[in-house]
Image 1 (cartoon, rainbow, N blue to C red):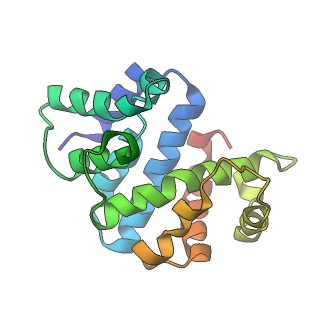
Image 2 (tube, rainbow, N blue to C red):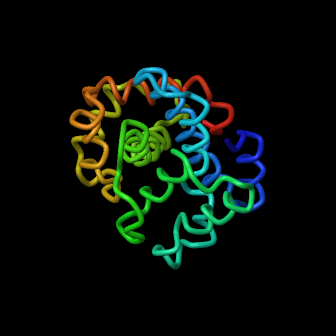
Length: 188
């Protein structure tokens, strides 16, 4: 399996935007926490979280190519099958039609991807712009305000209840807590 160090090298090679890197770090931290909750392998889940948008800077104008570059980078490193490869294939299935979501790890990525961005948005409207000042209640308050971060697909996040058997408040708490624990890496 590809190591976290190899993944970080790929990110730094292909992602210059610091905020995009921080998004991938946040998803990686959240995936690690969810693996612990759901009985997955924290190292595998974190690597997936870190990799999920590794090629976004290069493919954002061609969304049908998103994840395909990352898959080719992994192939060059000898990683051409297994759970990470399948999960990356399913990550952009709206465009690629490469694979359907299977298992808790892939559903965790699907649901947590948008949530980390939503939590960042909630944080950035706070006067101090610090994750420490954000609570589940403040996230839920903004959740109910449809005009706030309206590009975030709340239904995608809410699938945590059906697909992961985790209530939304608990899901937000898990992700928020791990983001708070890693606030330095996230710049918040």
